[in-house]
Length: 212
Image 1: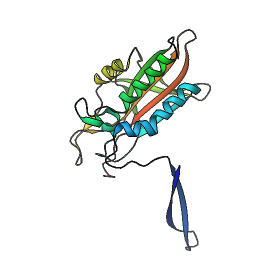
Image 2 (image 1 turned 180 degrees about the vertical axis):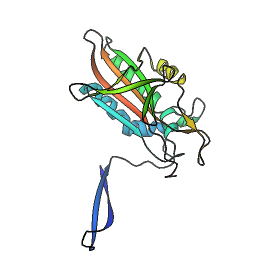
Image 3 (image 1 turned 45 degrees about the horizontal axis):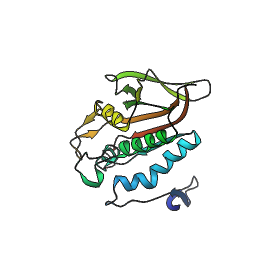
Image 4 (image 1 turned 30 degrees about the horizontal axis):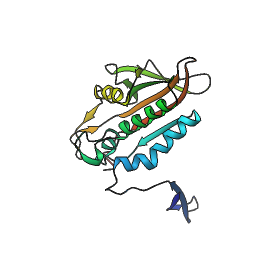
């Protein structure tokens, strides 16, 4: 793991000059030729494996300016497009169902997909029905009313996502730009007790046209 220190010049209340240091830690850096498979193998697969083994909760964010490739990284380019044909959604689904099969069965995979647009949440698998984010007595956040589909394979998950209708707009940088934050929530559940073994949220953030 490496780190980067950014030095920010400041002027204090007595008008004297000062320097504030910000340290950022990161696990890896990928060049423009890096493939979705490479990003998944080094940055996302270890998290999936850890969550499945530890019964935890994790989140993967795709963050960047408009046109930087966030949605392409998450969704992929489709069949016949070489090393980037599969995106993080597909690669995560394949790995997750491999873990489920390796556990000897008895586990259920459920998924919900919603967008956050102009401060409100909409169910992308249920005709953009408005849903609410609420906090329970333990301080955990839940999307109340979100439709969840039970899935038997990675292919079913991708088919489900293909039916969604995310909010997009044309911008100066991109003719088909995502204008909302899209959140895919995947749960692995033990049906006998209905307890959640692990949860993974894959978040494709809206781009910043100003930053571009």
